[in-house]
Image (tube, rainbow, N blue to C red):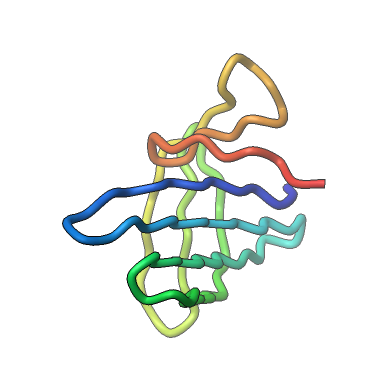
Length: 96
């Protein structure tokens, strides 16, 4: 449970983009995904929020988004640290 954040910087022709993805997982099985995309060329951030529910099954988590769609991701903890969540191959840091 908790709030987890990953930041990816991508260079594309004529632009530099920062994608910040935050997952919030609650003990009751609800979650929220927030993605903030910032483009140097555009000069302003775009935010997408998706409410969801989740179920953990072994080393997989099934995330069902409200409004439709379910994704199943493998997850683990990098270096056995409770503050480093690896979700679908991307490492997220626990937020305070």
